[in-house]
Image (cartoon, rainbow, N blue to C red):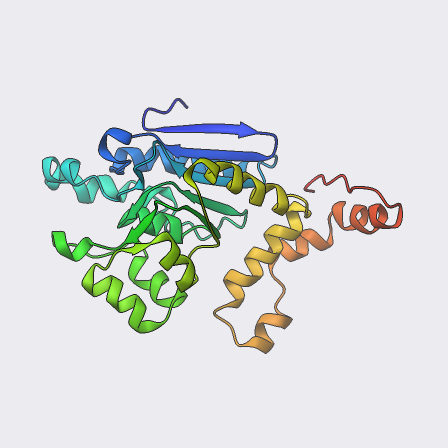
Length: 262
């Protein structure tokens, strides 16, 4: 499938998805969302793709959320168009079955749905010029793509409510202080830093990484004793994989493991 609104690049086991609409600050319409959903489907289904980086084109915006001009012009069709998205805004905010690591490289403004896309990722690297907000109430909407729920689970209640109710915009450094962002770097170093994080992740066995993510995501809703004793599907795959033999063997032979992801 060819894409008009996004760019998809693959390098070894790394995939990069770039929202490529800088003329509208990488706003996402349902049509853009369908392209993103297809790209995330490809990432999730490709056994050779181990980590995905999500970013935006240009130096102004990661994504400013819903394309409101498209929304205004197509108001009567929006419900129908949005219903075609299986995995929520940007093809990611309701994607609960992807246990491969997702890294957001936030190169500028991450507003509304753009912030929700970043919050759907496992790691967030932000440029020094990045900023985050959920301004939906200012345009008669709300952060329905997980923003009100994810943010209030990630940071203290009063900080979250200040952002959700007051549309408070925070800087990259504030986001890091809140614990939303993993690292803040100069814009010129953003993608290289995100790739370094991806490379560090890929030093681990891919099935071990997926099993770990699944256990965190699914275990968060369980009491501790139930979470520890639970048998999650990705962990079962890991325990029956070739890589579970390769890891100890490589360690004993003092060499780098040759992960196969199976």
